[in-house]
Image 1 (cartoon, rainbow, N blue to C red):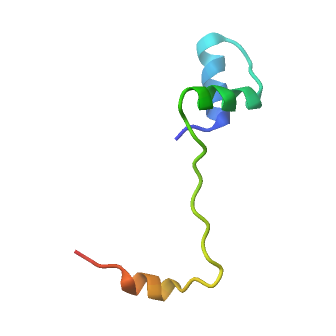
Image 2 (cartoon, one colour):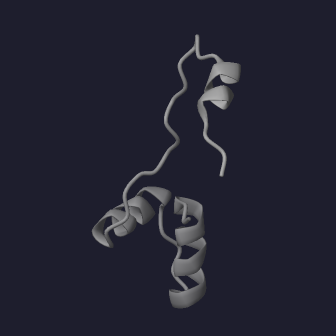
Amino acid sequence: MWSGKDMRTWVQAQFGKMVHLGCTYKFMRKAGFSLQKPRSRHVKGDKTAKAASKTRD
């Protein structure tokens, strides 16, 4: 998984140019990447009930 800082480091290593962090996100969107973040969890979620409902193979 790439981050903006990773992309900025890669651009600097490959092309010898320093780019702003905001530009790296533009590059990533144009390359087809999208923002990925984990889903939020419900505040009142019951962890034991969730674990009990999972099926095991």
